[in-house]
Image 1 (cartoon, rainbow, N blue to C red):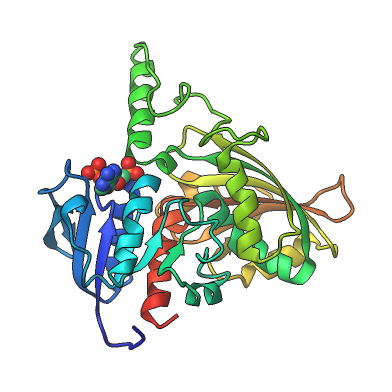
Image 2 (tube, rainbow, N blue to C red):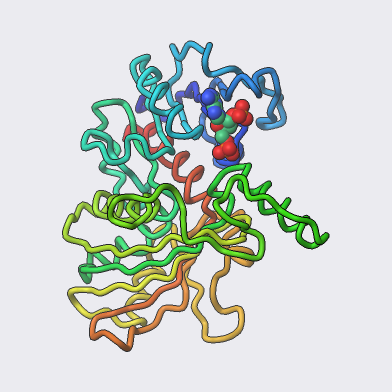
Length: 341
Ligand code: A2P
């Protein structure tokens, strides 16, 4: 699959979801060489149609679909769907790019951020490449260059994660609760564990035995795997906030060699996929709405020395969780595969 002029049969599993829909528009935007496009979802959506480059494409039922002939399959339909179907697509010859956490921690499945460790995508004995979790994804293009030059010993991170990370039903729940509360009606949490409108919730994914949530531990496991350094200490807190699109992260790092804010800005200005927005004035920092939503880069600002630690640095990192945090990186990985990587 390494020639420049060929086109690919691309399947999107979960094509009707928040991430699947964005995968489609990014494939079109980036003019990915799609020969044939196969859109798959559950029986609920089979028979509906979705637009791709001005043409209507039928959505098919995953359960009855034969994957023979698919070159690249982008999966974003949840962990149980990936677990059952990703190996079937890989066995039929497809390279699977999986957005769920099902295979991320398996030693024989590469976990890849396109700007950071593209070399890892080449070694995929099971035919599966895992897309990192959104909160790790946006952190890596920022921290990788710092780790390479200054050595990161420890990361303290608190996330502020938008509801779109929980899929279409997360978006609907924030919209519905907001409207209901403004109309003085009662609300009933369904998707989230507590009221999400005008509130925030320090609980994403399940609780684990160590008292952290799985969403938090993803930051620990995935950072070490992507940066290929198990010595990095990560202390995360993951919080769901009433924002529709765009995750933010308050990040504190301790490095082996001291890095000044100016050195960090210079390094990050040259980092692929990163945009520095860091002025000491109103609006001189990225926010989900003003900078990240609907855009590709990871934005970083509020870069300042940690005055409580001799080798500490603070950063504020914001990105569109559906784009760089999921769909964009998946398409970038498909491009790597298409180019022989
Ligand atoms: P469907 O629309 O038919 O339910 P989101 O993360 O935004 O909720 O989207 C999840 C995506 O995964 C949707 O496209 C959804 O399809 C799809 N999906 C969920 N469960 C299954 C399943 N069992 N088989 C195939 N697709 C599924």
